[in-house]
Length: 316
Image 1 (cartoon, rainbow, N blue to C red):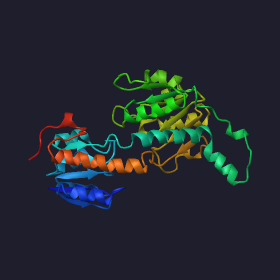
Image 2 (tube, rainbow, N blue to C red; image 1 turned 120 degrees about the horizontal axis):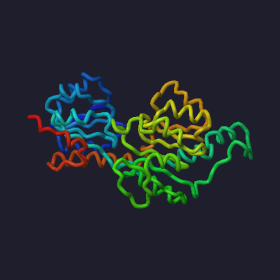
Image 3 (tube, helix red, strand yellow; image 1 turned 30 degrees about the vertical axis):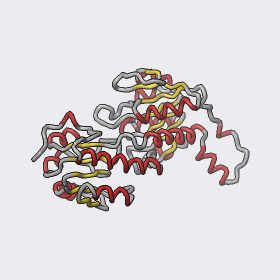
Image 4 (cartoon, rainbow, N blue to C red; image 1 turned 180 degrees about the vertical axis):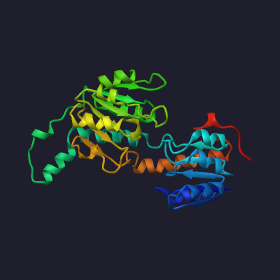
């Protein structure tokens, strides 16, 4: 059995390589392949690990031999899941490894925005001392924390919010009740929250879910935190609202436009470069979860399959 790591790993401990070698011939590629190269590599493998490469329906139509692939991350938006299923390829993700790390990062961004930490740091470095005027913040105690998406990360963020003494409300697509989170419709949540934290997957249903209308319904004193894909938010509308003071601030771990984004000019936004998940603990847990995904498939009991409803039968 041949197993390939399709594209350059962010993290690859020796222990993981050793364990993978027990499951089959394991080959690691140290680049980010173009489409033709990716198709060739996947056609030569039985199992693949994917971190960076977008796999489209056209690519799956040309891939032979591959039976299973595991995404390194929780998000599945790199992969055309129906096309993979139609090709008889099972796809898994790693859903649990970074929940605590991402939730903690939510509050790192929130505190940086709320207490103007970046501005305060610059002020001190420029010789300022006991400067108060620009740095009037708001206590989190008693404020309303709105969670959009009440899965693992959303629930972990809610737990931290309760530790600050915040009221926690939440919205999800299924309408299910979650202990400790007062369920609200999305429109209500946007109107009532002092902090809105986004924890929804990026797919055809959620793309653009935070529309200009919903963003405009937020309190002028509210802060938006997004540690998910930028595509969930109408970025143009968000810029206008932040620029005009109709939303107090935002913390963003992803942006739709990386170069020359007008949001970069705003002092009430704090950015991070997709690093919300990246802690030592999450990095190691990711390797454990990835290894278990592949092990379970080899043993005939696959777990964390995300395209089961699309599978049309295994290709011979």
